[in-house]
Length: 548
Image 1: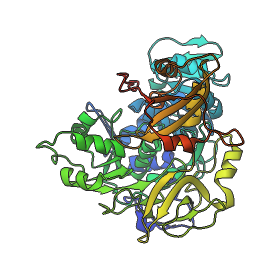
Image 2: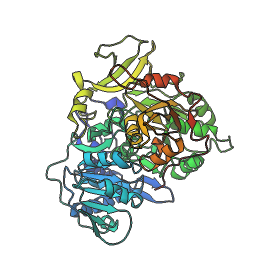
Image 3: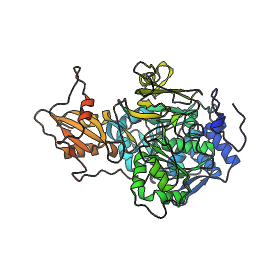
Image 4: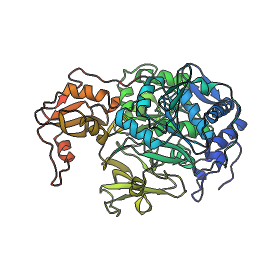
């Protein structure tokens, strides 16, 4: 590995494929110690409302919370579940968990029912930190192994079933520093388990090492960033766009501007207030911002660059109106930004080209390479060890399938053009992507089939007028039953997250099937929105996300 100076984390030109980064570069505990020593007064996190954390203060706060987590029984290698929105508390729990050498497991607070049960059971955690608004939901879904819960409200300690429920001050009180980990934390140790949205079945917990996270959004992958940039942290912490940006910025010595979630009308005021210079935007977010009325302050900000994913046709108008450089990329929870563009790509809807240190191929069903212009599945491997995920938690079969022949299989179809640019074509998996959320059609169908009037169900994507997909469900009724679309919406509201509730409902006698009785979703997708499709929004029913 190259020699590292005391004041500079290596940029992409220092990429060395034969090894991992040293622990004081990519392992949160040691990197935070180094940055608190070298730049104690530099602001790491700026929050809405004026709260600021320097690296020195962040270290003190992390050690204090780590002491409290240790007192609650958390040890090196343990899993700690977080069911929290993006917030100062969530960041401290993540960092303190890693300080102990334990693994943070962020869970979407919007999950309900069997989806939540599956994730909590798979996580295998003994302790969870849970937002007060979803406490009852989590306790109802929790396995017997989850015996300690910290709620985000004040009060006294109580017992519910086998779980002991503590108030939030158990984490915030003064504490003695915890003892050091039993063994040094290494770059290849598991840092986090972040759950996919589930594309062909139940959600999978992605095992990510410290090296993987740093390789995913650090200076090798996002080489258009500098250590002086401040990234907007507005994606939820159960996504890598929230969790990895937060932890890698802490390791790198850069900074973040933290908001609870993306709000179109507040975006530019947040950029100005927090001093943000870089922002990751889903395609729909860029569209929302462009549709705002032009104003005299459109260029009165310090933002110098944005990632727009997927790019669509937003790049040139966004750059022209707001005066920022536009980049795009392709990434997913399991990988490490294998494709990224140069500034202001001239082509619409591309994902960029392979970056240094990552080998990319497009292949057919038998892993044979396809020609330029032909559709193939994107598979990849890295030159540096541990720069990708190291499997799925408690799911060896899925791990073997994804990692066959020594390459990680993304399950996504691409075309490479003659210039070497990669263009996303479609998902090979049965997924729906709405407003940046990958949605499992399987999990929607499970809940639909729990309705007594539904005999068969298929969830499919249909194009959205904004960006990406809307959720459509095609249902067939049980014998002697009738299906009312509004009853289906009410049924789903108590069982799935807001973004999974279908907009469109179509009712037919029988779903099309193969000779082996599998539903032919490609037929339903080709039919799309038919004249007999019911539209929830046209019926005046609007579903909003929960506020935490």
